[in-house]
Image (tube, rainbow, N blue to C red):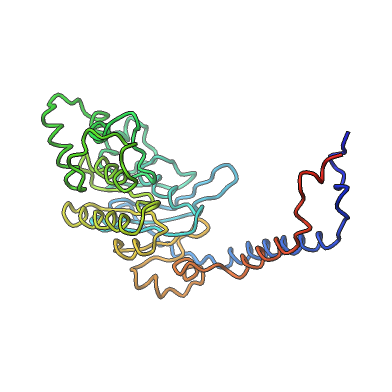
Length: 319
């Protein structure tokens, strides 16, 4: 029987492997230390009445993983705030705290001056009617048609007795996103862009004051993505919605954002207008908005694949 700890018999021990491994570990440790040094916190002190949504000293941990690190943020009513940052930096976690879908490990969250993070789910039910949430994938119910999807949040919060009125509501919301006439379609018959627009119609079904967009242009071609951008602008100008948009798409961020915030390692490292972000001196900001790979990342990639002899095959472990 084969010894699981044995070195494959078809491979000779090469001390270079150890050197490569040590080099990679040193690079990763150096990068981690540099990342900590690079994080210059632009978080400002806030009061509960500074915005329609206020997050005060929010820290969020999942077990030992620190995702948000003492973040304070006030969202101005009637404006579009865009949140950017690398994958895994806490953008979606941040906006889920705004609607209390997640609760902070410490800190306080306010909506229109009232604290909400300490409320029960029953108490939050009415407050959440003031929010619309566009999920990253649209999150339409496959078993419901377009009309039923849009009416879902309405039926969750109200008893619907006027069916002709509900038909008018669906028609109006679909018309706002250019999808009137699709009431009886099921999600599997819609394109990606159409699903996003139907999901947006559902998000505004309750006439919310705030719309939270989680990666609204992800998975769409540039033309369909720009349609979503135009809809975000249309809803803001036409209905006066407050919007918070999480995105990796810098073209979208520059187009829709009155204010852009960048998260990095759970902290806000940049906060301002599009011009402020474009000219921001922080190297991590410039690296992200320009889509550039760091030299540390390149060094690790180059060294980790430089010696093909380190790539074992299944047959190397056979007796």
